[in-house]
Image (cartoon, rainbow, N blue to C red; front, side, top):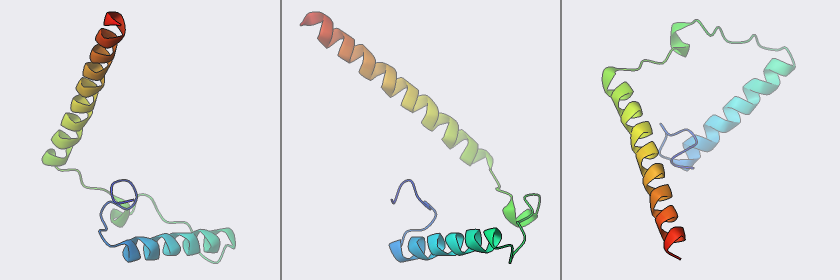
Length: 81
């Protein structure tokens, strides 16, 4: 949960409260008691600074490199046995 769901929150109670808020919002949207959010609104925009973009890029490249390295090691082990 810490690494994949609401990663910006550290406390499990905060994660639970946000999840409940989202479910309530979904139900109110289905009941048509609230309007959908405007996706063009500034509060719904994510700011990606250069450091964030570089980190994301490096993480993807490192994961690819590790995946290829693992495959090479597994192939080497399978060929020797």
